[in-house]
Amino acid sequence: MSRTALRAFVRLIGPLLLVLVVARMDDRDAVLGAVVSASAGPLALAAALNVLNIHLKVIRWDALLRARGIVYPLRRAWSAYATSLYVGMLTPGRVGDLLRIRYLRHDLGVPYAEGLATVVMDRLCDLYVLAAFVAVGVARYSAVIAGRLAWLTWGGIALTVLAPLVLLIPGLAERLLLAFSRKLAKDPSESAEPGAASRFLVALRAHVGRGLLFTLPVTVATFVVNFAQGYLIARALGVPLALFDVTCLLAIANLLGLLPISIAGVGVRELFFSLVFPSLGLTAEHGVSFGLLVFAVVYLNVVAVGFVSWQLAPPPTSPAPSTPRSG
Figure 1 (cartoon, one colour):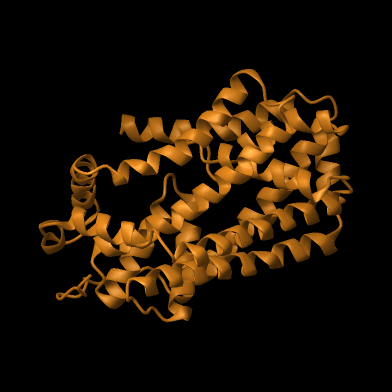
Figure 2: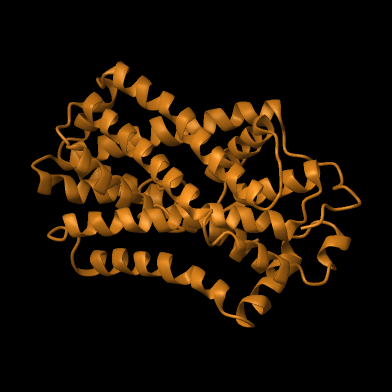
């Protein structure tokens, strides 16, 4: 119970930061006024782009699955992905990502190790492309991102790039992932399956190659859509931000949002924007308003889409097939 309470408290740090930022503002009413008076047209277009963003991610996941000989109907893949995003937005960690593995196991009998490989590679595409955008953003705002914040940001970039390389170290990766696969498995036959960690590593490493010539550009496209959403939100607020600035701002905010002190980056995003916006000739109030609308238009809308998906295609609860699909 104490560990659960501690994890819940850590997740509240972000929202508490948001409260602190708003409380220290000279004109708190300006934040609410800006959000309420934002133009509906650009916001509606930005919200609609969430469907395109999710679809691009489903296409990328489908390509990863097909590279391993797994044919998953696109409609079902859409449901699994949208539902996993819904769960991921409302829970700490990457629980939503793991839910996709359960869908694959239930629907096609895909072994957990094989499903995990596609989900991990799907996530790695996001991390590496994000790291590239963040590096550009940190260079752009080097005058603002200084001191401890700079160390934290560059450290996050380094961790993003270097941590997955552990999976390429023979022996160490096998020992770590064997323990993880045992915790992940839901049925005794799968958890006792010999070589699950090795199967995962083989499947994961098989994605490193020509397949990335498709999945990485699609990943870049998903981020471009996200940055376009941010640009539309800035236009709705009447904030004169160039698309390049929006790209740099959202990239860094997305990286900081991965810190395990918030859900969907709430508070961390607004704190960062409140620090950077004054250097752009804007106010901290503008930054907080922008951050809150990004959360509402991008993240809450994805939650809404995922909620509908959950109702139409709830996560499988019945036992997995007795004869798993071979990897």
